[in-house]
Image 1 (cartoon, rainbow, N blue to C red):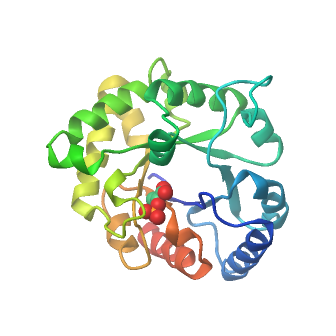
Image 2 (cartoon, rainbow, N blue to C red):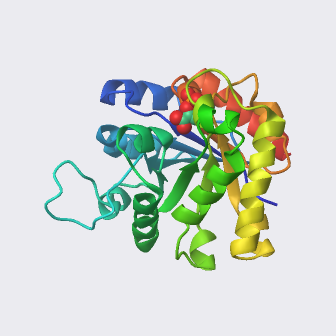
Length: 256
Ligand code: PEP
């Protein structure tokens, strides 16, 4: 039985004051929470140290939204995997479509970052997904296959076992237009099939695959009830404690 993971990607939102407010609200709302699902927040870099202190004693875990493929050195503006680990990050989002689109990240670069994150013990949340144009041209499966093969290149079975995959159709991110539960589940099944072919069916069955793209309090339950959807990566709705908590509660209900 795969454990459900609900992760909030705050993107470039929340200064340290707003971070403190949101975490105070979240920890208050989660005080009766019994750890039925994994809950992760991914604040911006500037809030991570504070967030780590504020989530102590709660069951919330923390991740970053990006990291460098390099260890250290003359890479102005970059943050390393080890830096993230030493301030309390357990996860790191890699290959988000906004990184691919605005910062020209490729599957090859994302693959390097995944290897680096794993080498220090961070769990990568690896994002893949097709654009609207690609879906409308009927090449979703081809794009997903290329991305999976690219980001997992040369990874061993025991490395893939440590990853979380997030299927995030680009057309659903921040648009208010989520993939239907059936559309999403179909791609999740494809991802599982690819991992089965590349590695083993045993590993495919174990792999946690989140859905991301306009998940909210209204649609969370139907998305999370699908056979192959193991959680959510949530942008907009993770910025308000009430909306994020409603998604966590939907996951708890589905996990029962
Ligand atoms: C995301 O950025 O990963 C995301 C899924 O955003 P939203 O929930 O706002 O669509």
